[in-house]
Image (cartoon, rainbow, N blue to C red; front, side, top):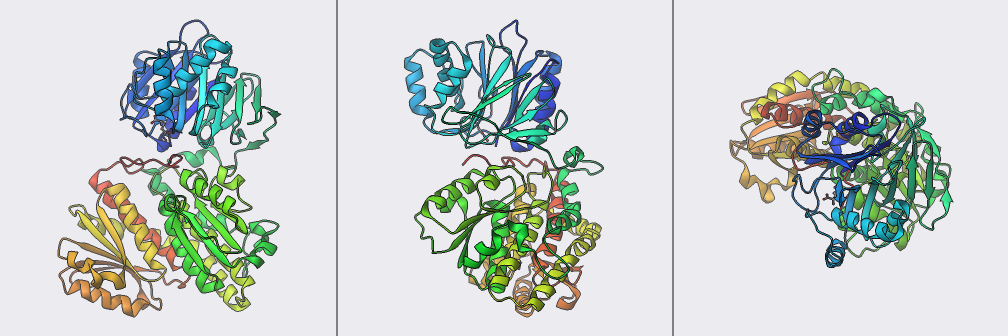
Length: 610
Ligand code: HGA
């Protein structure tokens, strides 16, 4: 989850690196650092605890200058956030590295290197790597060879960028389990954990494969694969416009991203649905044949993407009649499981680099399943490259750590997939047309919900003093309630839990009193009447209810019942539309509480470590 950026250029690289770090800060932000080489002196390094702006201030006070540099924004895994643990790490005063990932055998290497006389100044796993490279450098005398030999000793996940003051014309980078992309410039080249970091300087990128080791110079890029063979990696152009990563008129990225939903949901449908049917080829050339064989779907995801998977289970079982299981990746990967014959393995991840999801996919591949389908937002990511079928969500860069538009576009893609699978399993053309028509209405309905922002912001004032909240939903709205609770936790730090409304009386009702706000999503679906009885149970215990419902659900505002009326929506597409008011509610509660909305404490975007 850390962010790495590096540059080799004729111009001074300090500004490029700093801007890159600012753009990567969503990945980690407990400390940041930079190392720059000018070809004359030893490595110049600055490291600061806190956000990138602390580093920027330190560098402004004592500038670094040079044509080669690496930089890092950290999300600590080993060792507290501190200046000593911040990257770049050094061995002596001439070798520096930045690292994203985890070195699993670092204890053993640390003991070995200590016995060799290396002194450790940090608690990180990363520091063993820099000393190991230095040890090899002393023997081999070439940075490239030293890195190549050192990585054979590493177990775990890493993206590394390495520089040495005796070889100030290049950096050596490699990747194994953590993302790394090369930005191709003219007479200058760059590296970063994410293309976003480099958009001010290039829009051409090469994606390293697992095990690749690259030598990056101003005028050349040489890549060798795991076996040591010289390889070409295709150059592709970044597809989104550079300003997609800017905040524009909005106060926070999260708010901007909430408001982008009508457009990106529409973009995710484009080319994949006609007026009345889904185009299964949009899932891949072999999709038609492949889906024919699928008898079971196993969904794997983490966090918000897991909630999208839970909604999809209702769709897949309801529309296609195909059994579907959903599991969080970090659990799936560490247990024995039975993969049923002709299972489609469906991974959902915004970044496509989520370490647990990728590990689950790789493990399942060994166990054998019919095919892997990825729902992902980042082209060229590991998940996309390692799957047989892909549906790219068209959310554009999502910067806010709390996911919003990635979730609703995942739902859109999952509904398209569910319909394609359902058609193979007897879904009638009429029902398909009915649902596709409903899907076309979603962007407009989301806009209608966004127009209710003022009302929702007013409602949020009642939450500021609360310490807990309960979210209720039934059927496919239960995962929507879970996602609502997660958003509130993530950005406002209010403890929130979600329950299927029918479960209330089996325990959580004991928590309900006047201090416990209860938020309910209540479209007029087949469960509406049952849900209303559950609301009465809450009211009878003095609970304050906040209900998002459409007119037809007929929930009347009364004392202790606040109702926000939503547009009428089709039962199948309702989870997409009903997610949006809960995002707005969490956002406004967080703003009132004064939290760091885009970068909530302890979290990071794109969880590339376990
Ligand atoms: N293990 C290293 C890098 C952490 C990381 O990649 N986080 O996403 C450290 O703790 O510094």
